[in-house]
Length: 250
Image (tube, rainbow, N blue to C red):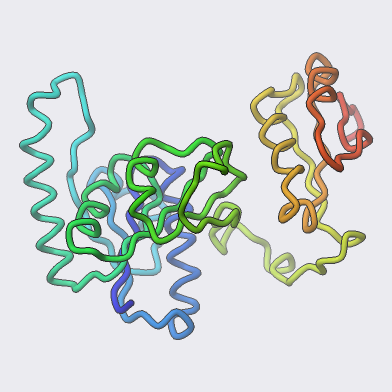
């Protein structure tokens, strides 16, 4: 791979991990053997603080979202797709990494049409529409959390966590942590004072994943009203002592 494009447009949920991934790639440029790296994002994101401090060059585009005026959609979309293809050919793009969302479609179509490598990053447990469409063409997909439909995924995949920008991590915390069960990273999860059902369910599923549980020890503050419901959903080697209804002493 000589030239990589990270398609990270849409919202901050796509942009921030995309920029974090760009940071990690730039720090290991020789290791991964590429020459150039670009972030492909929407024009409306020019003022995004993460993109303003991106570690690589940006390529902007104006790919439109699908709106109620669907009959007008093809014209600006095709125009922006052609612009994307011409720019990517000029830069000799070999690989596209999609962070998901409609704004990544032009980059993914380029990779599909010209048989370039496709890697997908999915931040949710349920695969988004765009990533789902391109999944069968992907070389690999990386998940932030264990996917609900894991058995149906027929391409190489990994649960890698969500990319985090280096500025968010305190320097004292960037060391490697021991992997033994007794020295796992302890994580406290809260969904507010009343709890949050979706967060509780998401973390429970993560706790059941051996790859995650060997490195992390989760404790969930479920919220008093959701405690019994959460307890009944426990599967696998999860200790009930780590499921807490509420705590005044944080």
